[in-house]
Length: 137
Image 1 (cartoon, helix red, strand yellow):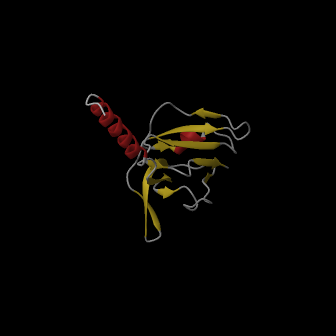
Image 2: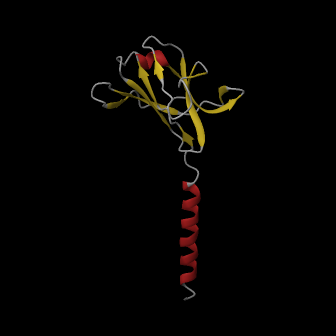
Image 3: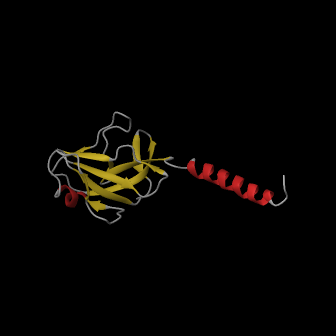
């Protein structure tokens, strides 16, 4: 191999390895939606459902969560954005272009009809949020 190609090869290998290591860190922290520090999903499993009454009130947060002594606990408020998915057309529309760490749920519900879903989006690709839609009943 020519001596001038070695730096190029080394740079290419470093780039590949750094890309692989960054890709492995995506969605590694369990995250959940909380309303007044209570888990919104009825069970944190693939079968879990997020449902709120149209008269619900309180502070909505999205947080990495820990499970200890049969209780889910929010670790810290993470940044999230909110959209609303129409129950009839399934069209998704942003609620706001703001990023939140906490949000009065009644402000979002006031823009919803029964059958709509509140869609939560994390701003950190290390946060897995499998229960990211909340049905309004």
